[in-house]
Image 1 (cartoon, rainbow, N blue to C red):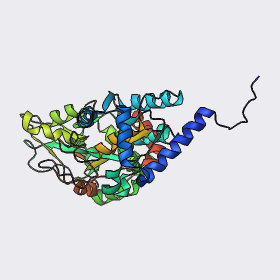
Image 2 (tube, one colour; image 1 turned 60 degrees about the horizontal axis):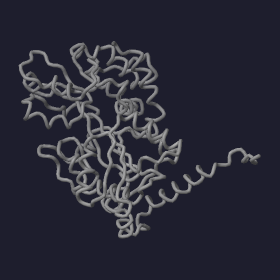
Image 3 (cartoon, one colour; image 1 turned 180 degrees about the horizontal axis):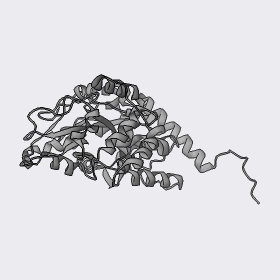
Length: 374
């Protein structure tokens, strides 16, 4: 009969995971501890790594890295929630299939993958040298921006003034937005409407000359309610939103809200009459990070470190830089033709507070589901 462990004592497997996770976390904080020549030699000996990702651009980056180094990169592309859940369940079960993850919904991943110690933050040499500290924990591969758009064939001037416009009668039934219920990034972004509720309330009063009357707890939730009561068009695709807004020959085209700005790369090829708002207040849209994390039990830890290092270089980021709307924290990036640099966008877009988003995205989703017209 085995002697039971005292309550709260970790199993040997869990204890080993915690030790490894701590060591890797320390490596991410103090990159100088890595002998990079030794890392590269060990990576060559490992010869491979596995990456879970939400974007096909990681596939391209993996192929180029493999050509450059000879190290095989197996990339598994998954949906955001599927990837987080799979990574979590495999880690819980001690199944060490993945070395690196590339994801976008960091608040959800932080709770299940980072706070549990299953994945850790690793800052490679280029990021340590080039990235501002605020982009290092979590390690940000890049930022994506989402904007408000309109049809330039119908509107000679930017039709937007404020996000409160989208609750006005003239916008009724004309605003396209990807369904918040299936878009974690939108849920995170709308928590910023709650966090900055006082700003939204002040803007309303400045626009209309009277205080905002609310039936919800704050101005952020009140905005969600009024927006949904104005009958927006709920979509499942950013591509369809951009094309629907920008198609020529329309008498009464829709408007786009929170679609990815990278869709503007299609304007020349599809001959779209599409522009993003540069006047809407209090924000031109929002941005969110693409985050890279290292498995605390990576089987190919050195190859994984090399790949993460590669992604933070200008060369490694090229698959993401082939359109507007995606920006590396590496200041050496040259903006896509016609786009503004990241520093310009960062001043004009809202990000979101990760911990606040984690605590309040459920409130956003509950309010959305309460008022959405399906």
